[in-house]
Picture 1 (cartoon, helix red, strand yellow):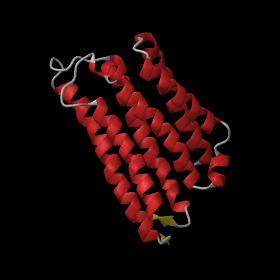
Picture 2 (cartoon, rainbow, N blue to C red; picture 1 turned 90 degrees about the horizontal axis):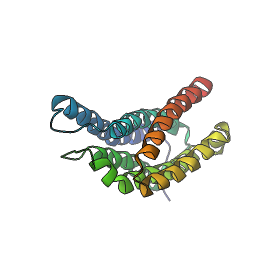
Picture 3 (cartoon, one colour; picture 1 turned 120 degrees about the vertical axis):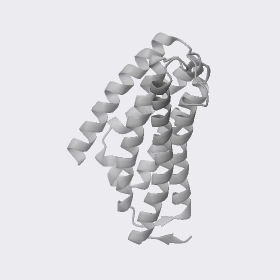
Length: 190
């Protein structure tokens, strides 16, 4: 198996991942701008907007998180492919949030796809962290794996239930926790 470890390879991988992540971010921002530009055309559903904000934060967080890839001593094509597929999950989530046409029922009607892929993203995130090394996983403590397992379970419930109260509680608690997790993680670990 051929692996490479030069700084140029890390830069190349970072650029390719950045292109995919940028497309994801552009999809969210374009979707939000479309709602602002044509408010009568697309009915605004607060839970949908909450998940758009959550994806914005998640994408920014992941892009910062992937900076830690430079600690990986050598990267083969398998890891490269894995990382591009991981980033592609974010694009799929953003494309599901903002299709060509949007109505209030769209989000609830596509919840199985959205939450299925979001749950998969949290599972793949564990593998992504493992790539960065055993020390990285240990530095995150018990909260990181517990967080991902809880999110996977909540995503399974969200995919199954159309209950709007559950979805409202999920997005509100998600946004509060997500902001808390990001700031605690980077203020402590820098």
